[in-house]
Amino acid sequence: MASESQSRRRAPRVSFSEDKLRRSALILHNDDVHSFDYVIDSLVEVCDHEVEQATQCAYLVHFKGQCDVKRGEAAPLRAMKNRLSRKGLRVTLQR
Image (tube, rainbow, N blue to C red; front, side):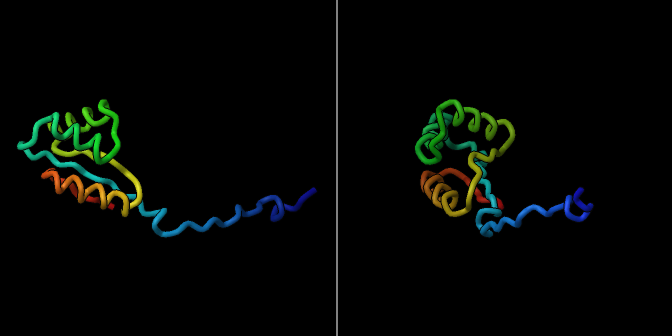
């Protein structure tokens, strides 16, 4: 029979890079300027959303003031933020 200390083996340590642990969110803010169609088309083009997902995000932004439209690693989200900003949309990156 195994002793108590042998039966409580520790799980192996797994190392993650700091970037993998730092998940970010791309937040789209309401601006009362752009049409629903423009916002939806922009989310489909830049964030690779399906039309249904982009539509849901547009409604959330309209009624709640903001919506996290994408989550993931900071670097790709930063590129999406820049593209959406160039289209005139108000977006922020949140860690």
